[in-house]
Length: 190
Image 1 (cartoon, rainbow, N blue to C red):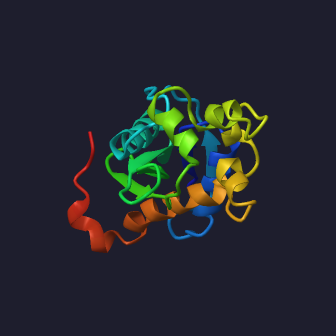
Image 2: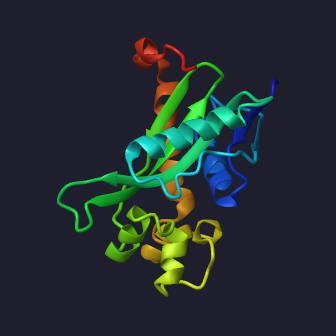
């Protein structure tokens, strides 16, 4: 049986765990799978402040991680403008899965940061982890590496960073699993 190698464009253990959890639900796509984190240098936006930066960051991570593998996965969190919210923004996560030719994109659910956190992110003063620390909401330097992540903190672990991220991966996998529905979409990404 041929081995499927998936490179995740991050060494973050929570992102890698999310990919492992998502792909186990797709035995017809992924068998004999090795999933490994790959350190990538992605363009720094600070914290992506719009959906374009968020999705572009995921794509860049996936393309950069595509080395000696079957698939690569890029995961990026960032803001998107949402009317009728208190801050005007919500946080989401983007997933890009790359097979060397085609890019498959999915998004996670979205939620609103506390207003002061969003203001610091939009002003370029901090990413979410630093904003939470500066505001005295946590003592951790990098909540994205702490079990459950920030979403775990905000939901009292009802949703963790792993499960939040897994949703974006599952949404990207729709097009891979149901290629007969999406064949006209697959034109390749360069």
